[in-house]
Image 1 (cartoon, one colour):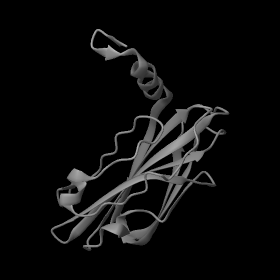
Image 2: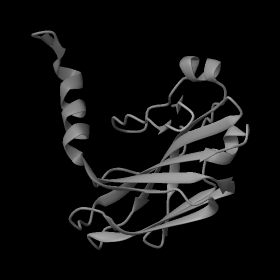
Image 3: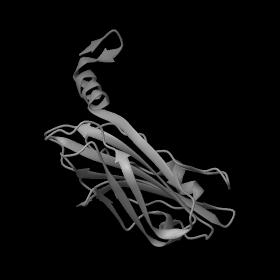
Image 4: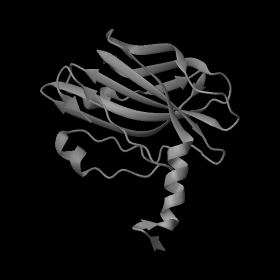
Length: 176
């Protein structure tokens, strides 16, 4: 049914996804490393149905885009599930952005540990709190894409909600 240009069948899931996810914190580390640890990240209010969504942006001075996608993310001691990833190479450098989710019901702050398959020259993370009892993180969107021509034609698999993933390596004008 369409009412005033909006589908009433679609409106409720969109509203639910938007109200359930809240930005919590961000941090950046510019020390070249393959392992980054971000302490005292805000996670919002503790809740039994809370999941922490982590957006990770990495950048290398090599032309290997896959090195900018973490091999693992740990959120306050809980291994996160990769939801989605995108990476690009341009001008001999690479940048990548990925989304990860972990069920972390306790604590209003915690540590986010990021491990890359190779050294990255910088890493940025942002945390979001998603409170939804029926949410189960899956990696069905794990379809890494590299190269600027592929990014514009990539198919994104829905991940039980609405998420916008963006990232940028401003030093080299690589954007994802």
